[in-house]
Length: 612
Image (cartoon, rainbow, N blue to C red; front, side, top):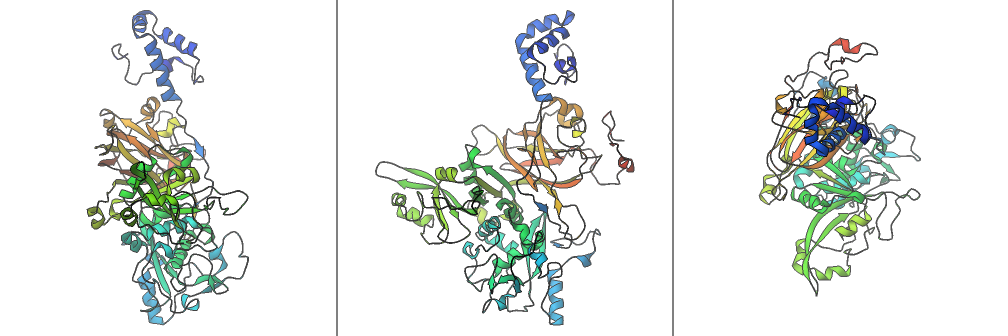
C-alpha cells in the first residue's frame, strides 16, 4: 500500500464500507477489498492475497471497535472538601481568605491567652458529627480524655499496631491502614505529629496530617470524643489511657464530614491518605500469575498492604470455619520466602503475615497458624529472623496458596520516593521513579469523554511518558509502570463533599514521528488502538493499574466517561526504571474560557474538530 502511494493512515477497508456497517461479514470485507483493487490495483491485490485481507480485518477491529466500559462502584464515596484546612507549605495564593483556614498554632496560642479549652466549631460535639443519615440509637456523651481515664497520655510506651483496636464503627479498613502506618516511624510521625500531649500547654487541641489531592493538609480537632457509659465508642488503644489512635480517627472523620462517613471505605484509600502513595487493588479470584512477586517487590519498597474477604449477605462479620472474618479488612505486615527443611526436602515457601485489627484471638486456624505443626520444619534462626511469636494478638501467618483460596481482595499502596528515609535506602529498600501532573476537564474545551466519543476524545488533556530502562529482573526487557488517575474536589464551599465522576484513562504507543504532533488529533485515535487502559471507567476517587510495557514513548489520555463533565484531576506515573513525562500540547496554561462555549444546547466543538 505504501508503494502504491496510499496515505500513512489510509484504511482501504474502512473507506469502502457504509458508516452504519461497523462489523461487516467476511464476504463483504473480501468484496470490498477486491472492488477497491480492480483494474490497475488487481496486480497488487493478487500479490497481497489473504495476508492483506487478514491484516485489514485485524486493523479494522482495533481502529473501529474499541469500546470502553462504564462500571458502578459498590459503595458510593464522597470527595472531601479541604477548603478550610491548612495546606502545608502554602503561603497564600489569593484564592481563599487566610481567615477561613484553621491554623493549629494560632488557635492554640489564642486558647492559651484566653485560658480556655478549644472547641472546634467546624466539627462540633453533636449528633451531626456522628451521623448524617439518621440520629444515634442511644445517648452519646462527648468527653475529653481526662474525663475518660486517669493520667491520659498521647502515647503510652511509644506506639505500635496493637494500639489500634476497633470499636462499634464499621471502619476496619481505616484501622488496617493505621496499623500498617505504625510500622514506619517516618510515615507515622508525618501523619501524627509527636509534639502533642496532655501536660505541656494543654488546651484540648490536637492536629493530624493527611494527603489530599496532591497536598498535605493539617486537620485541627478538639479532644472531645464520643463515649457511651464512660467508654470510647470507636477506635481505641489496648491501653485505656492512650489516645493517639482515637484522636486520629476523629480527625479523619472530620475530614470526611462525620464518623458515619467512614463506613464502607477501602484500605487503599486510607493508606493513600496516610502516605501520598499510589494504590492498586487485585481481585484474588483473577490474580495475575506474578502476584506474589508484586507483593515481594512491594515489601522491598516499603509498600503498605491490606486484604479482605467478601461479606456474608446474611450475617454481619460472619466467621469462617478457618477463623477468618467475612467483610473484614486485614493488614499484611510481612511477605517473605521462608526457608523450610523437611525430612525429605529443603527449599523456600511463600508465606504472609496478616493482622486482624480486632487484636484478639479471632485468627486463622489453618496451616502455618499459631502453634501449627508446620512450624517444626522452620529452622530456629529463621523463626527469630521473621519475629515469630504465638501471642493472642490477632496476628498470624499463612501460606500464599491458602491466602489466594480464602481471601478475595488485596490492596497495595506504593509509596512516593520522598516517603523513604536515607537509612531505609541504605538498608536495601528501593524507591519508585515518579512523575506527577495536575489538569482539568473543562466542558467544551478539554472534556472530551472516553474513546467511545471519538469525535471529541482527542480534546482531552494529553501526556507523553517516556520509559527508558527495563526492570532489572525482567527477562522480556519490559518496564513496570503504574498509572493512577485521581479526581479532585473542585468545590469551594466549606465542608461540601462531592460525588465522584466516572473516570478512566487510555494509553497509546507513539513512534518518533508521532512525537512531532502536539497534540495528537482525531485521525491518530481513529486508526491507532490503545496498548493499555484502566480496567474500566468507574466512579471512584482514583483508578489505577499496573502494566508491563517495552521501553519507548506512550501517550496517556485521562478522561471522564461522558463528554462535557467538569472536573480536576491528578495523574501520577510510577516506574521501577527512569521515566520522563510532559504535557503533549504546544501551549500550556490557564486563561479565560471563551464564553461562546456556554451557548445553550450547543457544543463548542465544530464539525471540523476545531474549537471555535
